[in-house]
Length: 153
Image: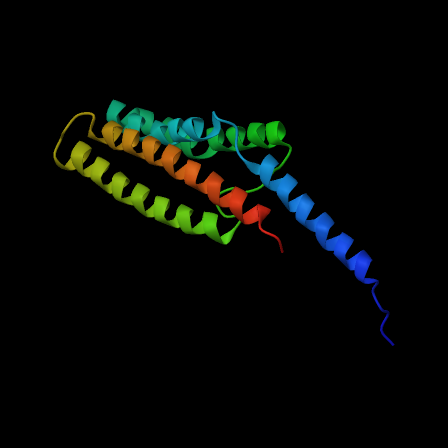
């Protein structure tokens, strides 16, 4: 025996879910400093390669592990929402995969310039390109996240 749901109660539940999704979407957008800070973090390993062999471990550990974790913790505290912005929705994952492919190509190009062609600062130049692509791609991720979270269920 199934229990009948009052149509008005069902409508109020859907309305409440839609409102909570819109509120979540408003709060999920990252602070203005988030993507530039993340881009600078990703620049660190590239800059370390251009500085010399003994700097590479520091650049990799700080730029790919420590600083991104700290940035995400601070952003979660500021927004009140802790989520993986890069894989939270289908739209953000699609952008993140494209951005990862671009970053992989830039890593290859930077290392080829620095070590293959012996162009001093080639890796740092590729790191600047990763920084810019992170900021631009991050803005697209924010737009997709806000759009996807605000969409009614």
